[in-house]
Amino acid sequence: MSEYPHVYDVRMDLYRDWLNTVQEVFRGSGSPLPDDLSNEEVAIAYFLQTAPSEEAAEQLAESNEKRLRTIQQTILDRLDDVIVPDIKLRTGYEGTQFHFQWVYQQGENIVENRSQYRIPL
Image 1: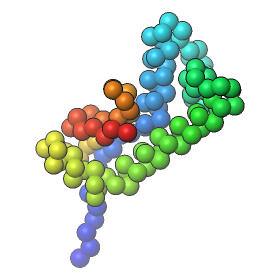
Image 2 (image 1 turned 90 degrees about the vertical axis):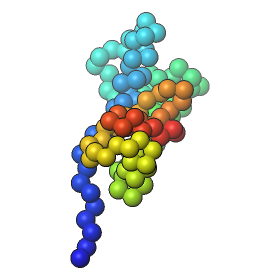
Image 3 (image 1 turned 135 degrees about the vertical axis):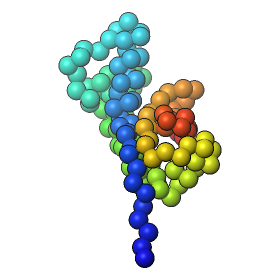
């Protein structure tokens, strides 16, 4: 008899969460980004604030997207054997629906909204 992994309803787009936060930061600074910018343009605009060149900003933007997508895939890959058991242990949440989001609150974190489980990065 083989064991089947649990079936979970997972919502997560960490890169989109990061992009939305970048757009909010620019809006809050009084210099909103144009609505028609691509994801790549939003990311480059963010990194241009501190990068020494546009080329460096492009590399940082690409690296950041890859990093967030890798983190997201790792969460999905380890959901059944690490993440969900830890959520249950730490929060008592027993559900099968999860909504993970990237947030910046005293550093980068991934927060699961239903249980308030937090993964600091």
